[in-house]
Structures are given as C-alpha cells and as structure tokens.
Length: 442
Image 1 (cartoon, helix red, strand yellow):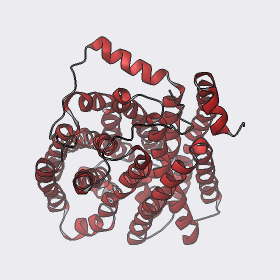
Image 2 (spheres, rainbow, N blue to C red):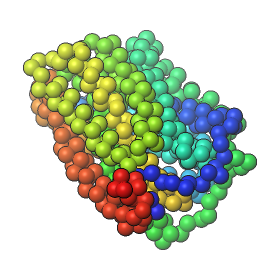
Image 3 (cartoon, rainbow, N blue to C red):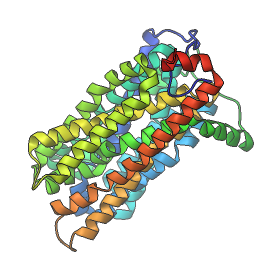
C-alpha cells in the first residue's frame, strides 16, 4: 500500500479513457454539485436579511450554518457507505431531490424554527453530492487524470457560490425573500431530470450495487481506513485549509466586510465573488502540481496555510479599516485554501484500496466542515460577547471573532507535521525502494 504523501505507481490503467459519455456523466453530476454549493452558500449574502426576517441575534444566525455544517459533516461516512452499497447515481438523485424540497421550505419559512428545519435538510442534500461526483470521476476517468479532474470538480462547483453572491444579492433586493428562494429551488427539478437521463454509475451499467455490509464489516472498514496515517494526514490537511474560505463564503464574510471593514454591500458581494474566482483559478494548478510532484503535497499545503495566516494577520493588525487592495489579497489568498483542501482527497485515494475509497473520502471530507462548524459557532458567540445588546457589530468585535482562526490553524499544522512523518515512515516500512525513489534518497 502506498503512502498518501507520495505517488502511487502501477495503478489499474484498464479504467475507461474519457469519451463523450464520460464527459456527459461528469458534466451533469458537476452541475448538481454546483447547485448544492449554491444552496449551501445562499445564506451568506442573506445573513443580514435573515436577522430582520426572523428577529434573531448573531449566535442564532450562526446556528443556521452550524446545523447545516453539522449535518453535512456527520453524514459523510454514512453517505460513503451508501455509495458503496447503492451506487453514486441513486444517492446523488436523492440528494438533489432533498435539496430542492429543503430550499422551497426555506422560502416559505416564517419562523426561526421552521427555517432551522429547512437548513438541516439543505445540509442533508448537500452531503450527498460531492462524494458521489468523486466516485463517478474515479470510475469514468483514468487514474493519471483523477487528481486534475477532482480539482476541476471542486473549483467549477464554486460557480454555485458565485450564483449565491451577486445574483442572489440582487434577487433578495428586487424579488424578496420567498420568490428568490423559490426560484433557486426550481433549478433542482432540472438537475434531477438530468441525473435520471444521463448519469450512469459505470460504463455499460446505469446502476451498480455493492454487497450488503454487516455492522462488523462496516466498523472494520472504517477502522482500517482511519488507522492508516495517510488517511489521517489527508484529514488534517482538509481541516486546516478549508475553514477560513468556507466560513467567509457561507455566513460571516458579508457581515465582516460590511460591518467590520466598512465596505458597501455591493463591494462586499464582489469580493466574495472574487474569492470564488480565486478558488477556480488555482484549483487546476494545484491539481497539476499534485500530479507532478506528489511527494511534496504536504509541503504545498503547509505553504498555503502559512500564506493565509500571514495575510489575515496583516488585515487584523491594520489600524482602522483595511484598504481595499489588502482585502482583495485576503479573499484571493484565503480562497486558495479551498482547492488546497482537495489535496487531502488525493492523499486518501493513494492510501486506501478501491473498496474503502468512499468511506475514506467521507472521513477526510468531514474535517474541513467540522473546523468550519467550530469557527461559525465561535464567531457568533464572540460577536455577541463583544457587542452590547441591541448594538451593531463593531470592527473591534470582528477582530476578536476572526482571531479564533489561529487556534484552528495551530492544531491543524501540528497534526499535519505529525502524520506526515508517520505516513512517510509507513511507506518506508512497506516499500523501501519506492520510498527511496520518491523521496530522492537515491
């Protein structure tokens, strides 16, 4: 078994080369993922509107995203097991259907409790998308293409976040809450029809079913995946790189830029869109770099984390509102953390056999969302702590709240360094020749 911090050689080249059907399957499944990202991110620009509609505080607003992230993260392993059992097409179709119904429910919600319930189901539907698309990529594309295709999937999916920024801001201002979210929900009907017509689990098979798993087999599979240091390295890489961009894009970026940095709502929306553009622009480059020099994947991730920490430090230490050029740098550099998190999936892929791929991917995909969940809660609590009752959020309160990120970065970097050493040691024990070749020891 190869380590997650090096390249796997001799993979099965019998996987079908991408033809028209492969690209069609990927395109439709990617469109569903884009829609899931749209629904996930649609509350980011509606945060201030939600506080007025439901009469809630900062911590209550954070609960929307908290529950959504909690459900998403908590379902990653069960969804991975469902994919292994029922195939990605079936799970993806169910996910798109749940998303559509949940967003329609959110449109009509007129109380805080009903809105919370709707966002829970948004998290459930969202959880059923990305892992399914990754499984389809692994089935329909050759191994040498997978790192780049996974990055393309992740970054192109962020087009959904662009749709949730400027266009959603316009819709809320011109169409109102209910009609805006109903219009968003209606897109899901088209996606479900596309899935039913186009997507196949594998070449020549519309649906692929796996064997039934006993509870003991499930526990054994998950234990084997988690015990490998490569899976844990991928977990902590995902944990450390994603949360800053996720929290800005999902909830707190818009209030931070408007209330904390004094920008107009339109400028804040443009900056959040720019962050998504940065994610999309850098993803393919990171995928190419990962394929070219897989031994240095963890070095690349550590360098990106260092850059994100540095820019945030400058912004938070700036006397008064940061200049616009610095905020542009902030959203661009923070956005790079999104595709950097995807590198963790490549670590999991090269550390686990095919029959454990979905469960290992689910384990890793939890990490960044748990970190995001912790940060969402912390920011809401700190803002309420530092803001007098009934007052608007202040720049000082946002500086305190955003500084909580340093705790998460510190934990993540320590764990990356720790499991990188263990993963490389595991490779040296399992395959000394490959370790020597990949590390340049000979």
